[in-house]
Picture 1 (cartoon, rainbow, N blue to C red):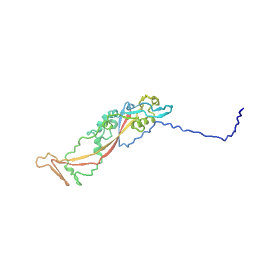
Picture 2: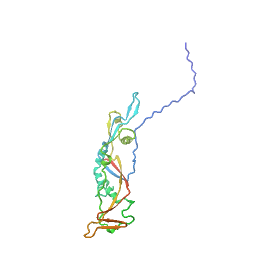
Picture 3: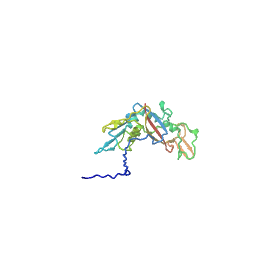
Picture 4: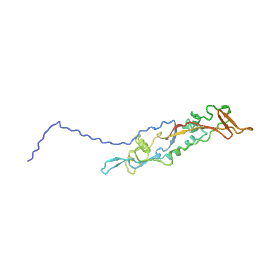
Length: 259
């Protein structure tokens, strides 16, 4: 009959460990650009701009979960439409500041053209200054400035992979607790964030402005030939002198805020 013998030593020990990495969706909110100015756009349903479909994780054949991403859509055309009135004011050459009560201290593009410091590397009259006494009129021409709708494009932004802009925003919402985790479990799920009052989504637009000065001579004299000479530059009735500034940038934060 077999005998079982036991060699008992209490100092035979072994430590076993395993690390299971669980990847959590989350992204801290932070502006990638430093804004020079901010325009507040209040919305009744901020969450409607961001939607997703599909599951956040799926399973392999052995049941092990693997990281995937839903299809996330940011409806930037709808955001531009919500800001259309403010955008119209922002590009209006008759206004120096926005007329909206919440933004009435924000300069318009025309306001920036009036108050910015402009540098001209090549001046119309060389080193000579034009005589201020000869200035009869200063007239601002129309602004060539795209609408916000043109800037963001006519199609919504869609992301399906890590690092895509809409997915980045989606993960910011997760980290901020604006998305119910229950909506992410269904492979056919669909959802949008739930925002509280004063929550916001911001779009940043860099506007590059260039100012051109055109000098012409007055055509209304009753006799003689219209002409003026300043320094080495002569402007005749059919001519003009121009100087073009170095471009300046203004980063505008369009802040879409839940009412």
